[in-house]
Image 1 (cartoon, helix red, strand yellow):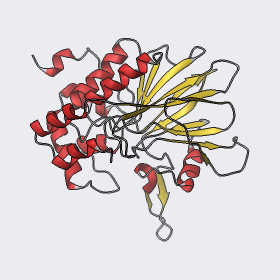
Image 2 (cartoon, rainbow, N blue to C red):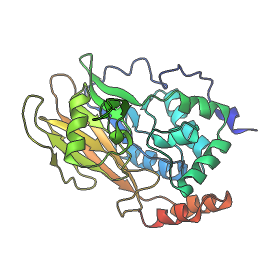
Image 3 (tube, helix red, strand yellow):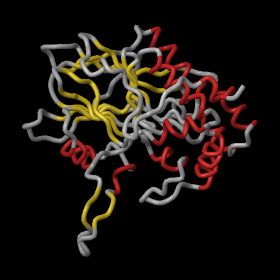
Length: 308
């Protein structure tokens, strides 16, 4: 029996991934599980899903790109996301630079280092046709968290600054360098918030969790980086936010545990959101063993033990 046998019958539209038709109007207290940079690590993803369900569950899953790459389980991760959608969970996902690499799309900022490229090559060879179709359907940017008919969150992998900019001397239009160079730099944060249409922005790519608060839409001021303690929910009713959940499958903030965020919209009549950042231990040795079995680079496996 092949892996594709287990994939539900679904043909993605050219510009979207599976989203339940009733997923546009959240009920009061609707909860989103926000995850990023899974990197073909189903062991870590299983731990996150189990932990999130134990914390009260979720109505939606927002996936911020780099679903594949590095790890040995790309089809399993994609299958898991599709199973969630088939079971009625609203799944909204965007693509990242590792999706570009695995699909063989040349990214304008150049290539990856040799170990990452080797992992991308292995992932590409391992993908089923259905998995390729899923990745090809991922948009670069999506909107989610609809309330009163309007989205409140922009989802992207890296900084959603203007997709192109003009060279200062030649005026030739070139890709914006921060598209996949997202960081906590205040200038990048500010440019990103200026180009999105929604109050809030949710991104990944850095593998490092972050919450930054901007003043209201008409208020001047630079962002404030908010120090949110693990496993504590923080409610915000004013301002605009950038939220990065960290990495599920390959954390790089010195903590090897899988990282994710639970985000709650309080419902009609309020702009308040609650952000809870969580970490969960998983069987790192199991995924490392699988990486070694399929001959992925040793360094990419060993770094999982240290979270860097």
